[in-house]
Length: 486
Ligand code: BGP
Image 1: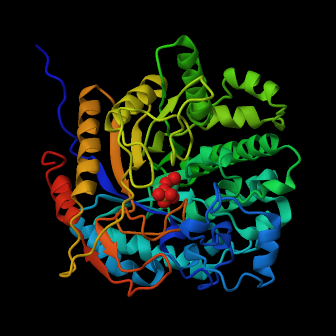
Image 2: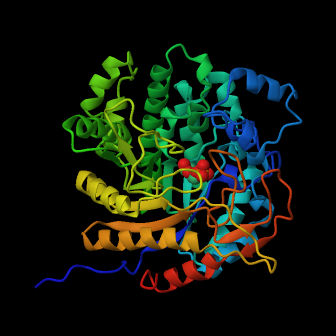
């Protein structure tokens, strides 16, 4: 009898994932220009309305630039001060045994306005130092080119990615960093959670949606520009860095039908298609047929230029990376009980618990997701975000007993192991926020994911001191035993 492959491959890439705007701070140091993330105002929970923190109006930008909101807080400008503390933080990642560390380059550090004649040398040097520090400990950087920040200059001139001009500026930025870091970085990702454009065009593409006549049209046009830019970056990466691997990145939401009613099943199928559309383009190299109907029904006409389709086809990604936090449950019944808190909607799944923020926790869904991806694309898969955002309590002696986080991660890693035994080519796992950082969706500090605690509260008070939580020793053992001891 043949035995299945059990356990993680020897070269499995264990690590953690971050994004510049949630981590670095120093938003106006080292010649950096303003980016979309620097415009995000913190709104305390009691004052929040749906979508508050992640959509921005033209008026808000004007007010910020006119200094009318100077009394407000902008947590993404300050992050957790990695810009000045990266050595200390990387030493902690090394102690955890990281093989890989996912970070993003802040485009506005390299091209402060997005379209400058020359790159900003101080910005380039900062990442040189970070990559050198990682290599000192044998940690491979995994670099996202665009993780929720677009130079604000491009928003002013072209409404961000809504303008086709963004493609040229982005590819120049990509070429600049590939050339500069060709001996330091071999794993790349083009756009973080590219599908976030449909939820928050400003976050994902610096697109101020109140400047658009037809919202959906603008969103899918901006996405087309990102698809072409991603393919062109893939082409450049392969040409400039022999042996490099470059992937796409999706916020994957596996959709289950709420019941076995064919209507629910069909609705869930459509939901899955709308979510997989992005990887279909980036991994298969063409727009899938099912989108034609969606576009027609929503008055969307994606304007393509001659040669775009050929570019998409010729430069598909080497691997598929994705974030996985939750699954979705879809009902054709408009009165179904809503899943409160789930970023992407859906109805409540009675079989699943939820996090403190209402995200439905579903480790088995990760196995289903991985199997579906692999069946569909037959490309290596990389889980580049997963984790539990939770409130942590610091005890008098400074310890943080985050057994709930260990439990969440353990259950997901167990499913990864099962999936590898299913025959899926899974190459790595970087859990989200190995060190506490600013939340993407709420700009809170108290939504913590880390193995490393950072002393800062939602109001920005604190010493920024780093300390280890219980999960630190746990994850360290997981990596040291290559996932054998969970
Ligand atoms: C993903 C983003 C990250 C991130 C994470 C957790 O969508 O790529 O940037 O922060 O989700 O989300 P949140 O911070 O809102 O809990």
